[in-house]
Length: 110
Length: 115
Image (cartoon, rainbow over all chains, first blue to last red; front, side, top):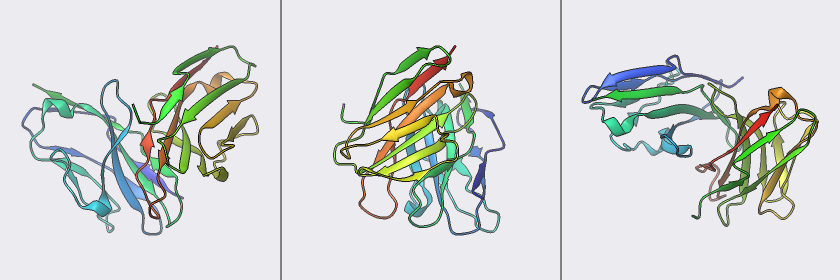
């Protein structure tokens, strides 16, 4: 079964502090992992995907197959990072559905 | 706005009534998805179309739910005999079939409240 776990429902950090949003997954094959973000009053949008190996808005995420994790990190948080973050998994090649975690609400305090 | 659009944005209905939602994908996106999101949870997959063919359905999609995409463009999701447990945000997403895996672009959602 495919499952995504985000252990923190809420995360609050100060501006300029490092941020790490945790994501663990359960899947027997080689998954694709994504981070989606939803800013206040906006629609859900893709932040980054592991196969792109890119940094978006200062965020990075590394797929750790040994620990089945895909944590999202940013060294210096900014107030505009406050949002709801969802980790998502896509299973075997050809399967299209995304399996989402329950989300983490990140608040950056000034 | 050339993004995914959904109508209506809000729907309030009484238990037992039928409701229908519409999703217009990004032009030329041939893949279309429906998800449901309840309070405090992430989106849950309901169904997926490639062009007009419905290729995957979740067990969440009971026989009261039906989705169509008759001409491979817009899609409708109908819920018959609504129940209070159907109250949720219904999200639509679309993606182009450029390669095996593509980014899904989400619409703003339709919030359903069943009284």
